Length: 322
Image 1: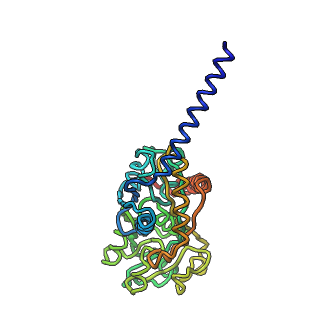
Image 2: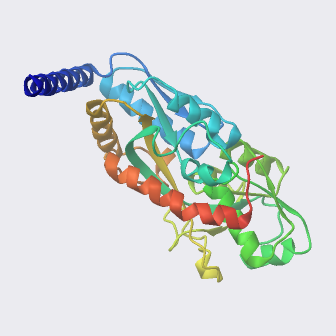
Image 3: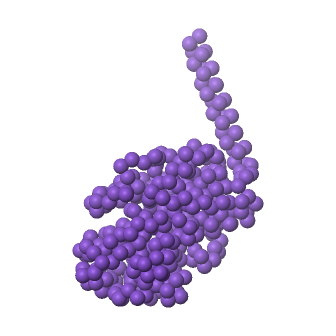
């Protein structure tokens, strides 16, 4: 009797698993049959917002369903990220985010989500180096000039948020070169920080290449250096940090995630769509990004490695969320 019950139990579990798989595949076949929301945990106008809107538009054109990009800035991206972690795992609420997902575990004493366990990676979207963009009236013309100036004068600088790659680049440069008068001004995204540089409220922002590229091309900001291994194709006249004698390479990344438990067939369908979109000509708005998709597994492994890489750096710098 015991053997018979055990066999029946196994058959029941197998039947339930098969039914669940069939249901998930059926849901994926119909997906999407209503609007999709992509949450960006930054203020409007930043590079993350821009790429989310470009991808959302291409999804709309292909699937015929509206894609709403919703910006939810605040708490070093925790507000928007938490909203996705708590959303229904059905593929209709997605997260377009960046390195904050992997730096917040070291920055925050506690988080309302786990960066690894509470999300389904979908695909990497792209990468980009950072640039020190400054107001044209700011005196220094290169990084060495800025160090000399910063040892005698305050340099308020803006970033996309605490422990964002834009912030970590500036803090690392500051620490390595003893520029104690560089002062971080916290913003809820790269867009507001850039606006204050344009207005002359602060002299400098550490930002992605794409963040201020139109303004740079229009002469509204200067670029003092790019944090890449070689000059960026969009900024051919801007020397790298290394060219100027500073061995500092920092890259921002962009990834798409869904809430944990989103059916694998839907994750696979979204991954295929991202691959399709990134193979298209997406125009000038994202031309400065180094676009490239990944498998969900590759993005998941990358997230774990980035947490291990940046946690000791953040602790060494003594950074904490406000």
